[in-house]
Length: 65
Image (cartoon, rainbow, N blue to C red):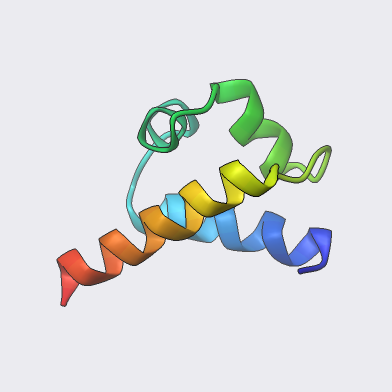
């Protein structure tokens, strides 16, 4: 996934859920700084962090169904 796509996606997911970066970070088990860097395109998530993000999205999708 290109960096800009991930930046947009993570920010969109967080905003749709009405979570602050701090709250979103807690949900994913990462730091606020990490979420901030992802959203601003300064870093990309590790494989583990990406797996957590995907699992989180899947769970939220199931919760809304």
